[in-house]
Amino acid sequence: MSTAEENRLRDSEFAFPKERKEPLTDARHVRNAVARFNQVEGVSNSERDEAWRRIQTAARKFDVDLSEKDWRELS
Image (tube, rainbow, N blue to C red; front, side):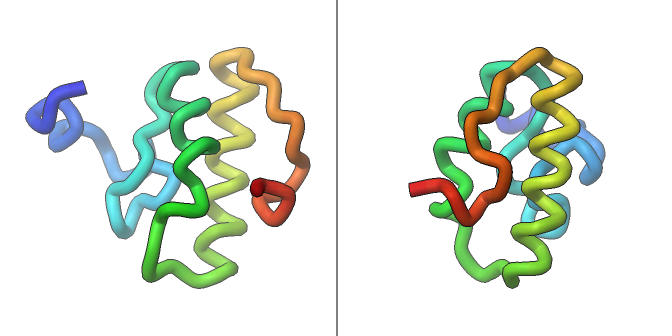
């Protein structure tokens, strides 16, 4: 996704909307958001909880299997 495309996304299309980090626009981006989840800095645990819920919703939408039930299970 180009920077221009990313700039056109709504905040709600990101796992971390305030930071506009980890877009959730397709299955590949959902998997990437999970892989990079712990690399996002400067967010609270409650923001991580909200981001994880967004990722779970996007995973269901794009048929991505998540083995983790909670972001705290990520290594």
